Image (cartoon, rainbow, N blue to C red; front, side, top):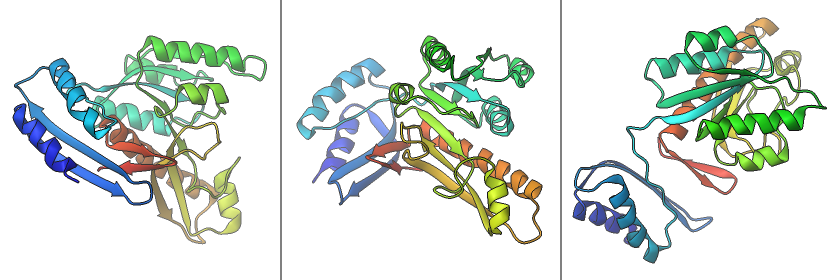
Length: 268
């Protein structure tokens, strides 16, 4: 009781003007989630963090403070399908995503020219069963060297090791080429076509050691009918994947996604 009142009062006392606020109380877990976006010219970022530390302690709050003026540093992993990569880069360049793409890593060479056109470093790291551990070590090195807060798997068709998943917990987003949990594995659109589906979809979720089982951030579907070929479904699916991944990245980079166990709370 009184958390919203207390937070609002704290911001008022420190010269903060609230621009956006949302909250959710989960009756299943007893957890209370809150996101407040505000302007504060009275205190510096560090001074405000110090004040927040003392304020939050009696409530037992887990909290974070982010400056909305700072784009989120990200690294993108991709394989041979570039629709999501191309879409993300265009959105970032156009100012539609508050993301600073620091590097692109791929197990193929296809998109080095695309990366160069955006003046983004491109790292080609071949991955085989024999070199997987070394490749992942190098990927993590690049991610850490770039101080990446977010790793985006934009149709990166390699399964990450459990150790890498743990190291990227809560900051790696994958796009899955179906409305989970249906049509897992290879050639999803061929499977969908064979079954005569009327909906195809895409799912953006956080990466965990359990393959394609991470907390879901966003999903969407597109309608299909008997006239659609495999090629039609593939094209529709790629559009859906690009849009779903872009929305998930936007919400994460704006700090709108809060983890709630195996689920997410999203303040859009």
